[in-house]
Length: 514
Image 1 (spheres, rainbow, N blue to C red):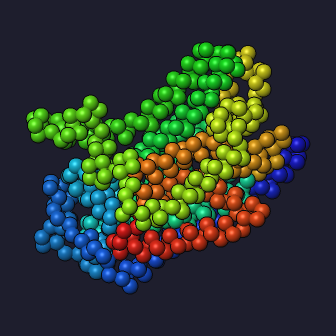
Image 2: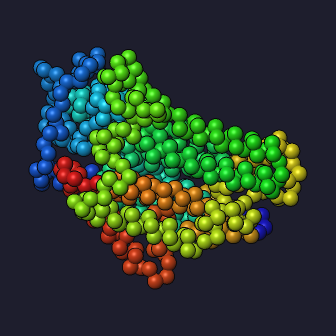
């Protein structure tokens, strides 16, 4: 491709890509407004099954802020009690825990440690700063709820934007990326992304971290993944992307470049990044151990305190919610398996389709891919501008310098224009889309998460547990443009629409959903 042609192609692609970004943002905002409207409609038409949401006993330890402002204390009045009550009535299910932790600035009970601290910290911060003037109008707890709604809906919009940018890089097709992003905006677990749950923050940090990872911003990616582990426990699985990348780069350094010291460098860097991602989650477990176990006599300790590896999170999931391998396989749970069957079926089909289409890539974990395709991968290698024959003779410092410069150039290019479908000569992954080798690590993570949801967890939560898995939307968008699969497009949209309506109806009125 000549320079003139490339420039013309870039100029043509840029406004289209900008239009796609605008459309994604509009779709994300529209979907959140739709969900909030549905919540208001269902709440006004139906009586909640459980009316205990507004109950708000005093915190075990009253803070200074609560002592002066908390509407849970006697003789406290608000100017708009009806509106405050309407906001508080929307604090249901797990939202109660998140708001309670933010309100009391503490984890009061053992089971509350199942809810990680990032969302409560953001809620507390916003309620003490931006939304603090609203406390006399609605009361402190209502402002906490309002802060939670604001944080999650804004986070969702930004997450959708990052998802589009990530999809463009991985799929090398702006149309597929756009379609997948709109599917995410109207995903079947949408009710949780508009409620006071941690799904929106997790999606934002995961998609953002992945985007910076594939564009060479490893430091930002590590920070984003580490924070995702402070939002949801499965955030620690994002370390798997660095493990996958490290595995391939170490193999490349050891067997192709024959550089032992470079291999050690690659393994050390990968290990340190993974440790950084794991650290916040395990630090929170240590915090729970410090609060619950230390300073107690042996006979007063909780059972998990005496374990060789005292993991509070695992104990809570098992003891309070009955989570465990095959423990949910009971006849009475059949309706919940049916409720989760669409998302699990989509996950399994996406994995099988990839495995059958690219068996040599899937079963070899990418090691049997051609050198050209490996070099074009967004996650495996980032030295596609340097011939391998030359790399093999470079000293380690030169190799690292070239990689650093290439990553910098790549990030600058991403800021100017995403690498959408600019025609790339001799790039075997440019037209593969969903079947690109770049999708492989996402497929592997999805397989692990789907197996965990089916065999270990309460299976009905699979809908929201898997809802932030990119391959689901990439595969669905791939099906929609595949010849002869038009009916699958209708079926996928019908599934999303049905679960949005059903979820907003049941969840907002305190009926079981997922």
